[in-house]
Image 1: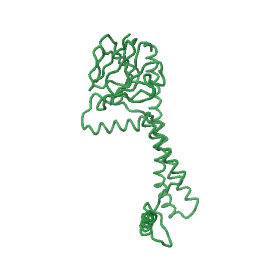
Image 2: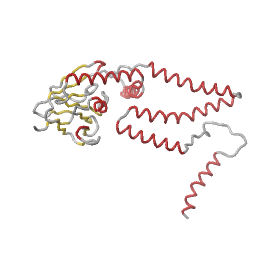
Image 3: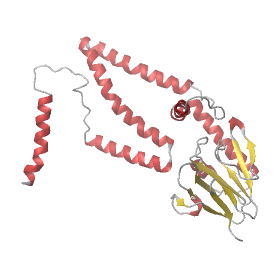
Image 4: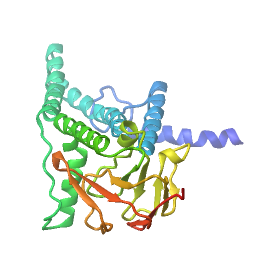
Length: 293
């Protein structure tokens, strides 16, 4: 009985398939009858992409996103390319012409993408004066974040910005009395936690969730794993004398703590420094308090 019930979906699927594609003497390839069916290796590859996507989301790896979505897009676009080459081959009877058609289809795509990656320059972003519809500015921000920030020039600028942050912080502030703060949810800043952990592991680092996100923070040096600590009370080492915000720009929607100093850096970035006193520092609903000696 169970075997018969399990066989019914398969027979129904086969009947639907035969009705959709009846047997004929000739077969014309169109977009409706070209299928990319994964093999065993294809299923393994899909599982690897899913694992890479989960790891990229968990650790906020931009390169991981590229290595995940780029192969997936190639697989999805392969169906379109197969149909385009097959449709052109019907009109080109000579095999050499078919190879030329394939090259003419693929080569412009490669050249256009390569030329854009090499020659495109990151555009300056406007934060202060945003007149007009909100969705237009949001579309511009998404275009900058997902396309213009992935070009060769943008990646070089990204590395230069990191180098500027690291050299300035290490030159001016000692790790024994300085704690770094990064932000997750600031619309005007990249979340720099991974870079701060990699380049400046000697500093205490705290990444706080701001904006509409629930209160919580990451403190890599205070826990064995990268887990979110819920709550808004952050206890700093007793010898901490200042907080240094490792952000691109301060979010104007967030009030600045009293005594916050702004240090301008190259490439239009800033460091924000808050000297600490005996009184706990309040910021965006968080309380930074030094531990008792």
